[in-house]
Length: 373
Ligand code: 2P0
Image (cartoon, rainbow, N blue to C red; front, side, top):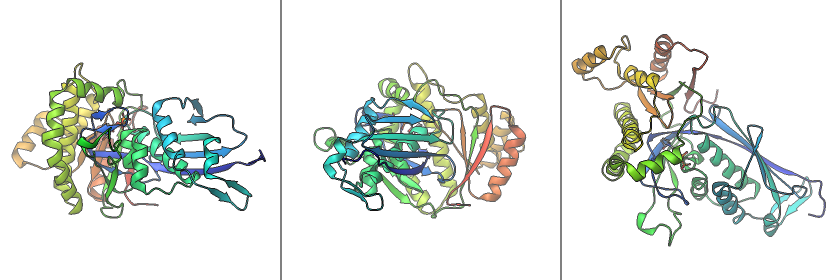
């Protein structure tokens, strides 16, 4: 450590995740503990992802971070929690080739430089904080030779942003809320972790299409929005106690048995209830716009040939059709559409392009689970 001219770096990539049973509402704001379990699908790492390089050198005078090339402050409690938790678990690190040996206790006095890039719009409701904090925690853990298992790391990423804990795993992931009675005093929420329900190969026919309706930053951040919902929405409390626990079990079963009809019904219902909670919040929060609402109706159509609401209602009544495509909307207007296979996905993209022709503000990207090509 006497020589000042060395630098050690680790680069990692984390994909974002899309919740099919939503997290909305905290029971502890500092530890980021949720009021209900949630389930998500992690996207293919080749597409919507964050790439983060963390570097350590004795020549660094302070911890610094750059996001998409712009320096950002690390003074916030979320960054500080992640850095503190990872540093406290650091171990000896040796790089024989470079002749570097960092002792466990040296990490407290060494500073970090962190550079992170998102290949998608930041804070537009596409879960950039999920990929970002998952990547930060994972890359720091690698750099500092932290030996914790992935579940423990997920509890650290959770303290950066709740949904980040789910991006530590691929495939289908459940964020278990943890035991309410044990919070704060005894366990500091260490049982609120992510667990993998099934890996990315389990149901790799699924195709996820994200229609970017708007890449503008959302007006109400998720953190503020969910705080206001917890304080004012009676529907949220009913949802977290009466609805989500049953839905979680049903969704786990749908994923296990690859039952698309059930998966789609649950995902659509949960997205709609989440946005109903937003409307039930005072003052109400509107994350979906007109295009999003039209896309909901579009997704419900059996053959996609008509967009008019009357036709949709008639078709729905006549066929009692189950959705062929699942839709889910997060804290923004962008549609996440999930098709059961490539054939339906191709048809869906054709129809989307027909009914929603891309303008300068719309983009279409498709993401295939488990497809590394
Ligand atoms: C989810 N969302 O389950 C839900 C659905 C948005 C709608 O997790 O305050 O950015 O950092 O814990 O994780 C967005 O919330 O909020 C989110 P914080 P986060 O994906």
